[in-house]
Image 1: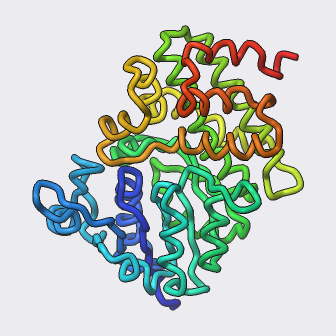
Image 2 (image 1 turned 120 degrees about the vertical axis):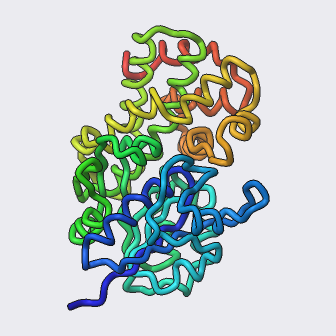
Image 3 (image 1 turned 180 degrees about the vertical axis):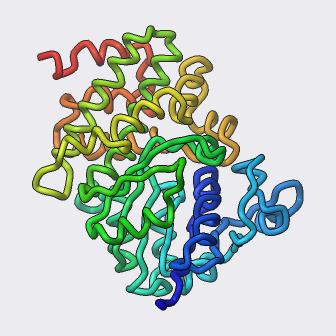
Amino acid sequence: MATPLKVCIVGSGNWGSAVARIVGRNVQLLQRFAPMVKMWVKEEHVDCRKLTDIINTEHENIKYLPGYKLPENVVAVPQLLEAAGGADLLVFVVPHQFIQKLCDDLSGCVSSNALGISLIKGIDEGPGGLQLISDVIRHKLGIDVSVLMGPNIANEVAADEFCESTIGSRVVENGLLFKQLLQTPNFRIKVVDDTDTVELCGALKNIVAVGAGFCDGLQCGDNTKAAVIRLGLMEMIAFAKLFSNKVSISTDTFLESCGVADLIATCYAGRNRRVAEAFTKTGKSIVDLETEMLNGQKLQGPATSAQVFHILQQRGLLSKFPLFTAVYQICFQGRPVSELVSCLQIHPEYR
């Protein structure tokens, strides 16, 4: 028999801990995987105790996923190289702002035969403009990288509520391997080869969710919020067509769980929507609200809107993406939230 595959989860926040529950249980059931899962935890202190010690003794991430036990075979490791060294499968689930440095730290430590999967919803700006997170990992570590995106609110996944997700993989057999690692009866996965679109959906829907949160903060009706979601979806499709690494993309991918389903869930229940609503009602900054409301977690929508804004500005395309543009300007340039609807009224979809 082949040597069982060693798994490392790179990240231990809300979503990373929810995924650790799935992976920890699955590897105990499948001989293809080694029974111990290492989870890299950025060390911090909670109630004067190291978070890694709490996880390894109480088997619960009491800061980021309280109330849900982790399998005892999930071991928290504070040293990144110790956690990832020797791993055959790397599950990346950290805020996208940290991926460049993390990969630099891992460079030379990861086997070229290892495989990665990114659960990170965001994009990066490279010298040439847009850079997908999977491409950052792929280029810096020299490994094949799949992506998993979908309407996966971490606490609901941890509670074993039924949900679905999409894996995008350039090498379908690698995507199917990660499906085996991650799928459960209540976490259903479909594998597709339109990887770039799957990943862009996961990043761009967070910008739309910020717009939906503004809508809620302004106490707009359901008709207006539905328009924000639809127009946001159209901008997601247009952006993907412009910036995908592929010659053409399939709009069918937007009908997968990574697309319209994730967009709907995030616009009604995600942290980006929640913070954007508070931003509208309180007048506090995004940075302050992130600190107050998210218990150490990071927002992706505002940061992604800034990256998208700069990319569109460089190409002279801001007018074609009025919702994306408005979200950035409201978050960072002091544009009044009340102007959100006027941005929609002039949308190119109506011309």
